[in-house]
Amino acid sequence: MNDGAMRVGAPGVSAPGANPLSDAKIVDSWRHNALAWTSAVRERRIDSRVLVTDRAIIDAVLARAPRAVLDIGCGEGWLARALAARGIQVLGVDVVADLIAHANGAGGGEFRVASYEELAAGALDFTADAAVCNFSLLGHESVEALFAAMHALLRPRGVFIIQTLHPVVACGARPYLDGWREGSWTGFSADFTDPAPWYFRTLESWLALLLRHGLRLLELREPIDPRTQQPASVIFIADAPGQPGAPDSP
Image 1 (cartoon, rainbow, N blue to C red):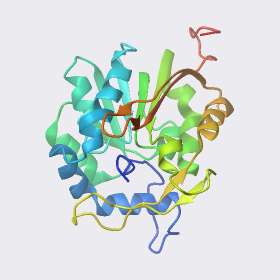
Image 2: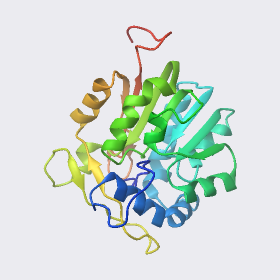
Image 3: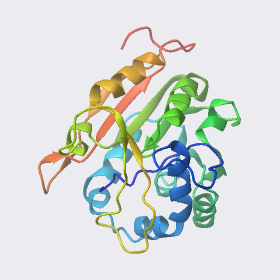
């Protein structure tokens, strides 16, 4: 996968011999690949990010003019650094301790180790004008838990910004149905091992997930890869209309 090597937060502990198609296995894989991922991002070796998706998520966040951002599944911290350089307060969280260590080593933001379940349980003393998941929603149960907690993580009039693989493009020749899929490091260096599985959702399922947790879609963007003229990703921008101070309609 291209940007399909998405970052994900999931259960904090994965047992040996974890189910190969599970949230726990995702975490296990990323713990094995933290250094390789950090090098690939910092050396700008992922073409789709360089050409399209990095700029796309920065533009989507800046368009909402947030003062404080929660970068969920922040990885080695590139997005937090980019936003902090523009004067935005950023807290980055990730379940993989080695990635947080790399992020703290580079500076440019505050970074903490936390799983999505811990966020859902209120472990952070932090709310944001924008909560951002940039290719970091790869799991099943962990993603449901995070969506359920979003009202508590956002400030009044705050937004939830998600960039993920475009389902129509990422589906490939497989049936267009929700479900677990095996991962791949195709296109990445031999430094990567043990690819993470991922939970495929159709576009309809992403929209239903927002609705099910009381989140309202404000905007949908489809950044285009100039090489293929196909969507490189899809970006959802949603709010939580039940919050104090939030408008009752778009």
